[in-house]
Amino acid sequence: MELFASLVSGDLLVEARDSSPELLRLDWSGRSNARHPATLLTPYFEAVLMRARDAGCRIEAHFERLEFFNSSTVTAVIQFIHEARAQGTTLAIVFDSQQKWQALSFEALKSFELPDGMLQIRARE
Picture 1 (cartoon, helix red, strand yellow):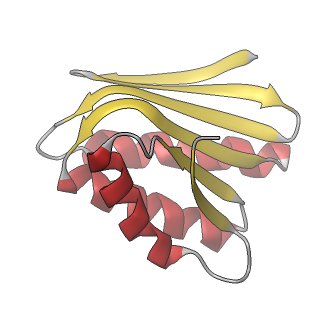
Picture 2: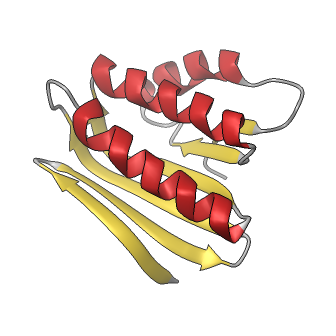
Picture 3: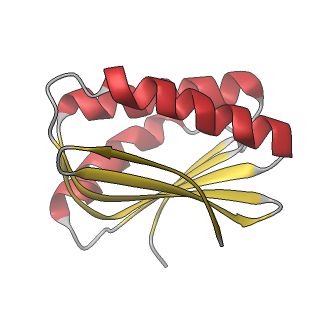
């Protein structure tokens, strides 16, 4: 897996890897507790979406190793979901259902899944 780009902000690390020609994988770890995370996440998401669009690949965002994210981060992730759909990039979000806070947060985001299959939110297999 080739490392594409990383975002490091405080206790948060997001690593983007070209896992295959068809997949760009984002691995989240640490804690996203910045007061205004969108100021960093939005430009990062734009770069990731541009890379996916140029490569014609889908994105998988893995949150299993994330210890915490605040409501401001959820808002940024929702915006990422909307932007991915708007540009026609398939996005999968993978979480750890054994962590209660993740199960609650990501189950709530399932309301953004539509029959078009552009977004899939699922527990880790």
